[in-house]
Each structure stands twice: as structure tokens, then as C-alpha cells.
Length: 216
Image (cartoon, rainbow, N blue to C red; front, side, top):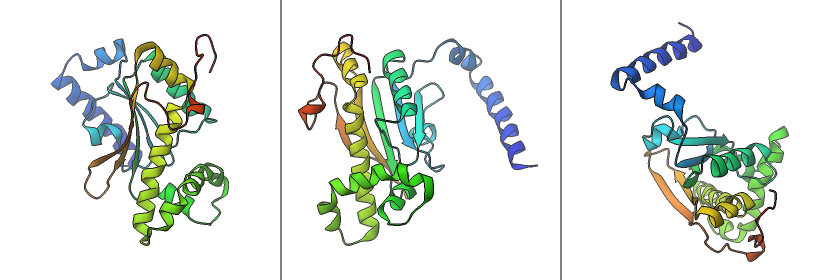
């Protein structure tokens, strides 16, 4: 059996098992989508959000890209964020990176990787912001993993700095934003950053005072 045929076969077996365990499972998913969580994670195939959190379909609204970035000029991410916050009204946003991330490792190098250089540039900016701390770390793997943590922290800040999130804070005191890093070696998630709804940001220049009626 070809690889893609194995996927289709496994899908049929999964669907049959879900119906056997819960006859109304798919009908509930058809009727409504009301997840509590937006997950912004890395595209790495070893970090499947539902599996590592033991959640079911419908529990998490998911956006993934290389190195779990939340970039203010990325219309894909912003569209997901706006829909999750304003339509689905998620209660929590999770930015989840993972130790040993290849995207962050590539950004730490001086090699050119073609078009993806433009994406990795955002991680290089994080490195520049935290360079004094990172240069004090002699071990390459430890320096990489610290940059991975700092990158998650910066993406959490980026999300909190959007008018999308700040308008929701004003309206319903949510969502809360969490920065996590998943460890491939043991499967454990390490919480490293958190911003609760209506917390003051690191710099007040990012805080909007007049959000009523203002477009994104």
C-alpha cells in the first residue's frame, strides 16, 4: 500500500472508532466550533498540538508556521488571530515553540537559505535584541534553546501589542496569552511567558487608548 493510501485507510479506521465510542461526535463538530484555545505553533511534524495536549478535534484553533512566529505584517496569521479572538472568542492564545527548532537554528547562522531568509530575519531580530545575554552562553545547544525561549517570549509580546487583542481585552477581559516550549526529548511543555488580559505591556507605546470604532 502506498503512503498516501495508508493515510486514507487510517482515516477511515479513526472515523469508525470515533463513532463507535461516541455516535454523536461528528454531529457536534458540524453544528458548532467553539474552541477555548488558539494555538500558534511551529510547523515541525514532531509537535502535533492535539496529540501533545491530549485534546480532541474542536478544542483548539490552530495556526502553524516555521518557528511559530507572530509577525505584524503576516496577513495569514493576523486573519487567524482576528477570527479566533473576535468570532470564536477564544479564552487563551498559546504560542508554542520547541527546543532544537531547525528554523531558529538556521536563523542563528550566517548561511543564506534563499527565500526563507526573509522569514528567518524576524528571528535574527530577536537574537539582536538579546545578543548580550546570548553571547554569555558558551554551549551552542544551550544558546540555541535560550533563543528559542526568547523567540516565543517575543511572539507573545507581538500578539499582545495588536489592536485585535487589546480591543478584546477591553470588551471581555480575554484572551490570556501564554508562551510555551515543548521538549522533544521528554514530551513535556515548559511554560516560559504569560500575559494576562489587560496587563500593562513592556512599553506603553504599544498600548492603544482609543480602540472604539478604529479599524485594525
